Length: 340
Ligand SMILES: [Zn+2]
Image 1: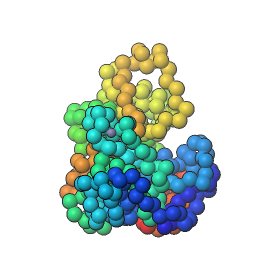
Image 2: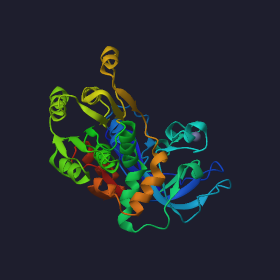
Image 3: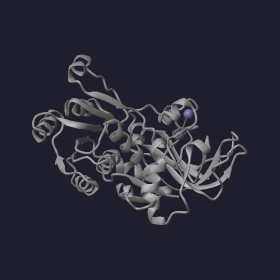
């Protein structure tokens, strides 16, 4: 089969790789129907995260099950399935508590590399969720979004305790931030402030349910959120970037007693203890337990109640994966969809 491999910063190649095989009896092999480039793939691509290349890339996936190991009971060949970036057993105490991305048996799909024609999925019964039937082609991008960015934005909103009557601010206008807006709308937020200075992304945020746009960043951005909330700050703030500036912008935009849901992968973030102490802000986040939300998200997409596939604005054949990285790096695309 063929797949994407990173050799170093800004060096993504599409090349021949070994076909995946069943290794553990709980594995499944899937043929990818679609895959994509994640904002978090840009950290190694930009050289901010060290690369020990050559290494396979990609952790978002939907596809058709080709083969299952002898201990797989629920997942069957021929099913269309969605999984998340951590494989998980979905049975341990941590999974049962809803934190499948910290499963005691978790395996990172990024080391397997799903920007490829085929992929091995560990712990198939715990990891994968099947659709009721084979989906129509136009729903595939939505299901692919559920694999990571929708589930991550959703967790951000849940961690920020979004709910009816609340004012929500979203820091970050990448796919996760935009889908956090969609999640906040679905969870009943009264007012949703999207922080973005990029017109096409503002437009999509409004389509997903944002009620206000704030273009300012940093201290000025915080000031605008305070102006819009009678000087108090938002009840719920979703942080979807992962830098020092974005994290502090999120914390300072939150009212005392409010909640920050942080889902941007933190890079070099250091929190000032004294300021946090006196802020009275709840902080919760981390790598999203997407698997917790998948059954509900799959159902909402299947019934066409949400359309998260709109975040994909650059469809490409999989062999042009390197162009997908370039376009996202240069912010020419919100998110590249790759068709094998
Ligand atoms: Zn587990």
